[in-house]
Image (cartoon, helix red, strand yellow):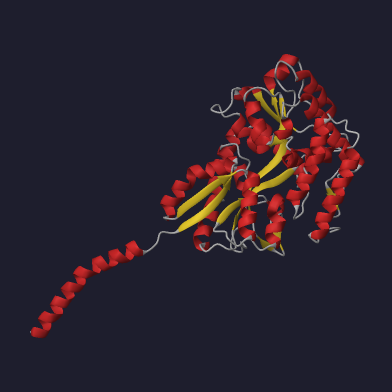
Length: 424
């Protein structure tokens, strides 16, 4: 009996103590946290509004930062190079830092990710030696945004070639409205100049060598400088897209060539003074030797190879690049990379016909790069940007433009040689 009583008492003590033990154990278990870097971009803005849903579903705390695109690249590069990074997941530009990050081993390989819903070329841009490192998020191509009301008032048709584009810019450049706008801020302008270079028959690189000093490329640079120098907004050489957009939204620009992804923002009634019905989207006018606007994977999502929270990071990556969020992006006029998002019935109902038409045209005729595809692309863009600014400041008439371009071509070639990419 004594033995049985002792066993009963011990059992009771254990039962009473176990909940406290279990509770203490649960409280001691740390909550998973990840650090995520997002771009100051329409899809980054969409993700920020959805992160609380991910946190509630998974119990993973997301500490995110939102940065302007060049700041994001600089921050990632600095942290990774100094081995001080605590970043787990980040938005990334395959054409901007992709080669450098892959070569340095800063991306985590994505062996288990299902890429079946993506065009193969959009995945290939972030692949090396058969291994993928980047999930494509957003596809962009260059379009012409224009004011339907101003064109109607002036009795003009939408320009279909560069001669008509310049004539329209001149005719519409009045009454405090700039006839034409595009990026003029040095390195930032390189992506938007690219389609003009292609349509004049030029390239930035050919066979692993810089060739933007060719007669064709120089003609394009002069044309771009003439348009912006004569008919662009005041201070255009200090403007990237985030500076041009508010001017367009305020009704102070008649035409604007830039990436397709911005349509949703420029027709948002909370952000623009122009009725959506007065904003048109058209193909970039063809040039004398081409009809090839750029079409690129402008943004992707990747994991850091140095992440100490890879399981949680993978959950976030899968969620942030999911079909469901891709459709939400399309419904917000963000041109997503997933094939299924473009085929979705609800998306097709509301998608602007101009976006659908220009996407189809660019997919068929476009060029898959909007900048030199090289590891030191940031430095190359800075160098090309100096040539662009010289052209804008002189309205395309600079007598030293050719020699300046030759000087910068040599500098870009040196970058290619340093990186072991010259002639490849």
